[in-house]
Length: 77
Image (spheres, rainbow, N blue to C red):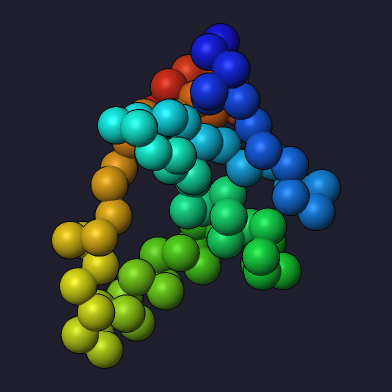
């Protein structure tokens, strides 16, 4: 594994990241899990996206979806 794809540990939570186009990109779902007490961070993120969209926030213009290594060793977007 490339060291640039190494996990970051924040308050005991592992956050996936990758180096792309001379910038660090972090997993939003992992970050949500670290910052909230949600037992299902993917669902929390999904609900948050919906609320932001309803408030008129242009979410998809600001987010880049990249492939990251998952806990099962496979790479997913």
